[in-house]
Image (cartoon, rainbow, N blue to C red; front, side, top):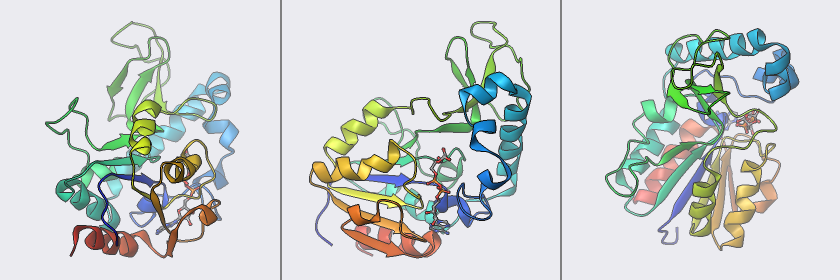
Length: 243
Ligand code: APR
């Protein structure tokens, strides 16, 4: 493998599948039992907030029943040992990257860690009125008061379809300097994440996909390795770290 300095990794639901969390698309996918428009849009929240809150309450509670798998652990190893720049951008709203040990705040820079949840997090609540985000571990009924602005407006801190993902500036900055872009366990169906491979290529990066099946943009990657994340990711990380 050539020498790399700056790495951006994009992860999706496939990285958590072997921990027992359902992916979105496919026969047993999370969306099979729900229409996306019923649980993951601003309109759904306005129409039936109780349903939306319940859906995310169930998923938040499920986190207590699952554990990180070998793919999360390998990425945590990369975070601990990689000396160059690294940003792990996850579309996942679970906390399995962090529970494996990735994403701790670094001393350098603004204290931000190397894991970024672009689609929000189950264990966070967002005030729909003032925009304040706060850690949230319990169930989140509708109408909970925001401690910052006192509006009864706390909602799941999930980026719904039609909303802008978090920290796009930081992601774009990382992609502008990237020399290795790796996409893991994502179908490439949802933008803007699905477009990161093009941006990375535009900036001259080598691009690698690790996935169970070829993603929608598979042809955009220099290398595609097909298989289970729990096997592919540890092997790939070992290769990057030289053993
Ligand atoms: N190892 C590797 N890849 C896997 C595994 C596995 N064990 N199991 C499934 N996959 C792959 C599938 O082949 C599929 O390509 O993971 C991908 C999961 O795709 P999606 O279910 O579409 O999930 P994701 O790409 O993360 O979805 C993106 O869409 O619904 C929204 O906001 C939601 O963040 C989500 C976004």
